[in-house]
Image 1 (cartoon, rainbow, N blue to C red):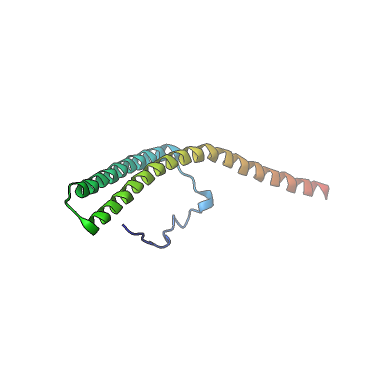
Image 2 (cartoon, rainbow, N blue to C red; image 1 turned 120 degrees about the vertical axis):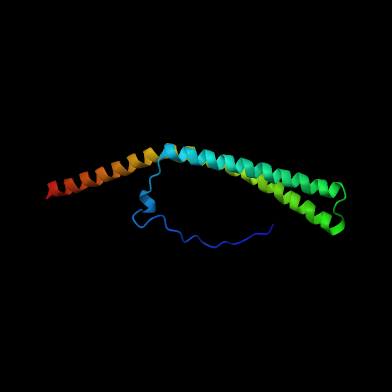
Length: 128
C-alpha cells in the first residue's frame, strides 16, 4: 500500500469549453453526487472489513513475527483510508452545496461588472 505518482492529468474538457465559463446542471449533478457518496460508503465499509480480517489473521496466529507486523500495518492503513473516504464524502457534500449556492451569486456579480463597464464607457462617450 505505497504511494503512487500518477502524474498530471492531460485530459482536456472540450476544445469549445473554457474552464472559466463551465456550467454544470445542478439537478443532474445531484445524481452524480449521490452516486459518489454511495461508492465512498462502499469503499469505507470494504476498507474497514479488510482491516478486521487482517487483525483477525494476526490475533488467531495465522501470521506471525514480521508478517504479523506487516498485517497490522496494512490494517492501520486500511482504517485510515476508510476514515479518509468518510471525510471525503462529507467534504464533497458540503463543497457541492456551497458551489451550488454561490454560482448564481457569481453570475450576478459578473453581470453587474459587465453593466458597470458599459456604463463607464457610455459616460466617457458623453463627456467628449
